[in-house]
Image 1 (cartoon, helix red, strand yellow):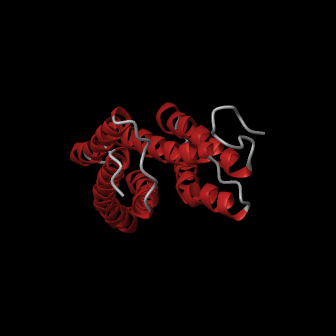
Image 2 (cartoon, helix red, strand yellow):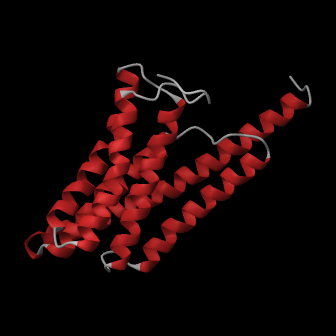
Length: 198
């Protein structure tokens, strides 16, 4: 089944996986902030992070790649990261300086997308470095949560969590640089085409 706006097939396996990941965001926030079910919150967060690659793999494997899927996948990633970041910062699991560093990267990306849109271009394709950084961050967050709420696991979960978060945020910024370069090349190529330059 396809829509009429060029988003491609809608009712596909990868799109359903992405939708389930999106539904996991409010479920995690409810479990973590509104109940004492911290163990379940960690589980939902871990499953959401580990399933980050599943929708893309399923799309390629089943030959069900669609524009809608290409939009849902990064949306689910971004919502997972931002929702988790705010929740963990609110509960003092991660410090504010880490939150600011990650949000600054998001602000750069939003600015880049706005400029591209104003110039009549769509978003640049997802880069594997960005996907890797997202996956690492989504592994680091539940590790930090486990360290915060389990004294028995703290000795190994805390350093492991920080190692993942540092690795993730560095790659996250590297990916932002790559996206910026991609965007600049895309705009330059568009101008050259418009000017009739071969």
